[in-house]
Amino acid sequence: MITTDFRRLSRLSLLIPITICTSCSRAPSFDILGSFFPAWLLCMAAALILTVAARALAVRLRVALAVPVLTYPSLMALFTFGLWLAFFR
Image (cartoon, rainbow, N blue to C red; front, side):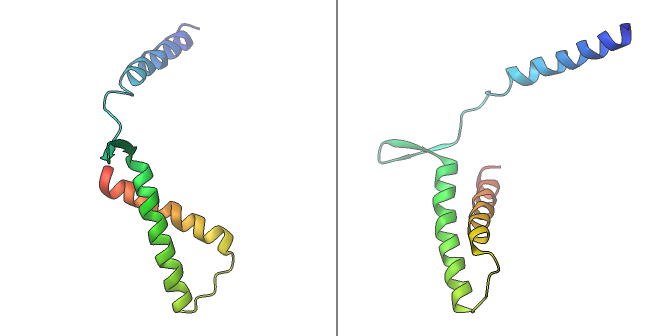
């Protein structure tokens, strides 16, 4: 009984510093014409351009996609997350 309470207390004591330090830094944002845009929004815009370019390349190479409804959003998510990791780790 005492060990169970000790474990519960130790888990709770680990959560307190985590919740305090979650917002220690500012969110990355860019000033564009006087308005601040979040960095993920810029990564998503760049990913949209890369996805359109990948589609044009696939059409030019005559690559037949099985499920394009799933392929292009997944490709856009891949580009978005990849750009985010590359520039803002």
